[in-house]
Image 1 (cartoon, rainbow, N blue to C red):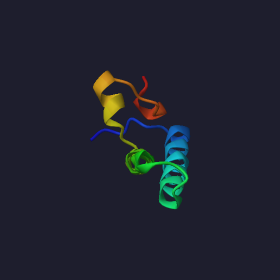
Image 2 (cartoon, rainbow, N blue to C red):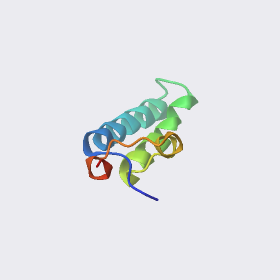
Image 3 (tube, helix red, strand yellow):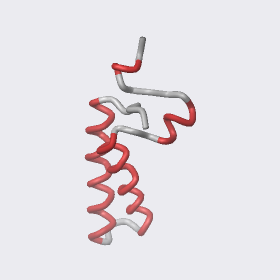
Image 4 (cartoon, rainbow, N blue to C red):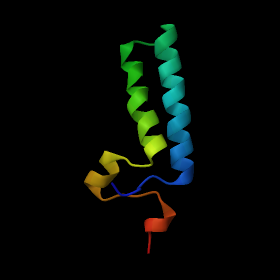
Length: 64
């Protein structure tokens, strides 16, 4: 698993994931809000399968 999520992208994913999970847990949005778990995990592990599928990366270390 190669890192393909950069610093700002990772922080944004972690925040968005926590917000979605919190909103879903309080009932402010529907069950679909638990998709925030996936967003949170991609931010924590700094790997996004979607980026890998399309050959993208926001990690500055991978760019040459």
